[in-house]
Structure formats: structure tokens, C-alpha cells
Length: 298
Ligand SMILES: [Fe+2]
Ligand SMILES: [Fe+2]
Image 1 (cartoon, rainbow, N blue to C red):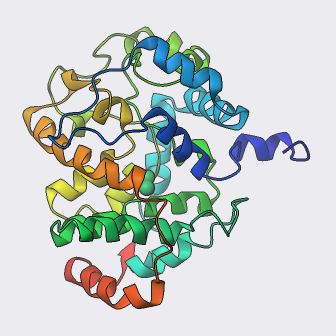
Image 2: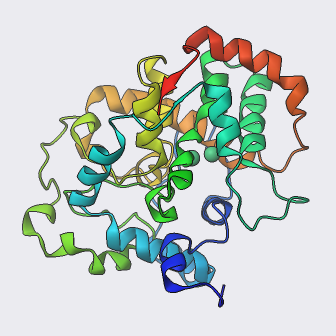
């Protein structure tokens, strides 16, 4: 990494996107209770321990993420990307496009983006979940194509969190928020900030990344449970730590059961054998066609 310029490091502090996901697995080594309950809030000291032992690349990634994800930044990225006029692609085409994302990962031990999507979907299928659930596993990370549009890693991946109100202590590397300009905006620093109690997450601006982008691309075609899984799968402060329930309405609280049901498939299905892409493709093409038009706007 020493040979990279500062500009490159601002965009790609991580060697690859998996470094963030590996860090999640260190923090959440266990599958949450099958009952749908989530881990009780971690103690502050536990978080501080993960922070202390994190790789320097991961630390730098969170420093940039927490520094630059402001309320205004989220609005500007929505204006920039949510007109969805960059490309027209079908789901499988988007999977292949995402797979062109080259990083420093070792091809012998790391799985490609396409393989991660297929593995996630296959595990959901093996557990005999509904077809829309399998499909959600297949597509959930397609928003990472933002990287291929030149977006920095910290604006594509990372645990997401609301902007426009106080940052929960349950967010990892909370200390880095001291450098975020919103920390000097009193209206953004109260418990509710610019929001109303229990009004619902749909009203809340969440830090920008692959979840919200993909949600906007696919929202017209999927059942509500699937839409929640796509939109909030990186919202670890809420779905694994139980933070921010005061911003949720009753519908959100009920739907988060599905976000929690999805999370183990995302985090823990990576270490199995390589999926046979050409063998699996016909099944998934049929599943895609059941829900999606041949082309979507990205
Ligand atoms: Fe993701
Ligand atoms: Fe994922």
C-alpha cells in the first residue's frame, strides 16, 4: 500500500471490500439466536477492543467513512445516483458487471462477488425459504457496482447509520465522528435530530452506500420483506445492536425480523465450496424472470 498515492488511499483504503466483511465477522462471530432475537447491545469496551485490534486499512476505512458521511453528503449522492440514468441492465448482467470489480483478493482462497451472491442464495435455498428470499440473497450486494462508477469504498460499503441525528454509541469507531462536520451542527446532535419519534425509517436519511442504491433500483419488484433486507442489511447498529428503535414505527420493527433473518446468510455462508456458476444459472435466470423485467434502470 505504501506505493499508492494519497488520492488512491482516499478512495480505496481497503485492499478489497471483503476486509470490511471480515471485520464484521470478527465483531459478530456467532449466528444470532434462531428465535429472531438479536445480540443484546455490546458493551462499549467490547467495541473498543475490536477497534484496537482492527487492521490499519480497516481503521482508515472507518475514519474516512465517519468523517465524510454527512447529512449533506447523503443528499448529494441521492441527487447524483437516484435518477438511475447510468445504465440499463438485467439482474444477471449486473452480476457479471459487478464481477469485473478487481481488487487484491487471492483468487485461490477468496470468492468473487458473483460467487458470494450465488453462495448466499444457495444457502437460503437449501434452508427451504421462499423464492423471493432466495432471490434477495442473489441480488443483495449488486449496489456495490457503485465502486465501478468510481465511488470510494467508504461511500459504498461499511455499517450504515442515520445522519441528521446523534450517532449511537453502538456504532463501531464512534470516536471518528469527532471529525465529521455534522458534529458541529447542534440540530443534528440531539437524540432525534431532524426527525420525529417513531415516525418510521423511511423518513430517515441513512448513510449512503450499496444498500440504499440497490433498494431504489429494485423496490418496485420485490415484496416488502425483501425490500427491507436489501435496504437495511448493512444497518448493523440497528439489526445487530438494537439501536435507533425510537426512529422506527411498528411496521419497521416487524420487518426488522426479516433483516435479522437474512443477516446470517450474508455473513456466514462464505466458507463453503465454490458454486458451479454455469450449472446454477438456468435456475436463477428463471427466478429472476419471475420478479424482474429483462432490463432495470441503474
Ligand atoms: Fe452488502
Ligand atoms: Fe453480502
